[in-house]
Amino acid sequence: MDEAPRRRAVLTAAASGIAAATAGCLGGDGGTTEQWLSNANNYDGMVDRTGQETVTVAVGAVDGLSFDPAAVRITTGTEVLWEWTSFGGGHNVAEENGVFESEIQSGEGETFSHTFTDSGQYRYVCTPHQTQGMLGVVEVVDE
Image (cartoon, one colour):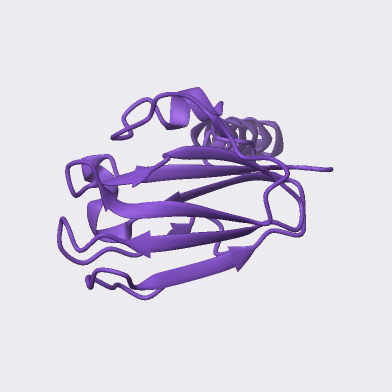
């Protein structure tokens, strides 16, 4: 009995199963902004702040577990300044791919900033409160 065809069939099946299982885990955009923010606190659509040099986002807004605004559109070269409200305990701002990340802070008036030089969508979370809906997006468009 020739084992080569059988071995090849088993390996092909295993490779196909692995590919199917990991298809949703690798690459891709993870869905639309609307889908990603569907469970975000304080999300009420994209706020357009294009043309401004600096845009401020409140950290710990509304119920203490929100960014305000949760989604903001800016132009390349804009600085986003996240400012802590002191509500909701310790928060940070962490982009999902590591482009930027602040320390966990809790004091009112604490700040963290990042200047966006490349267009694209930057999804970020408060790591301690991500599962409680503390999500945000910065959408950067070319001037």
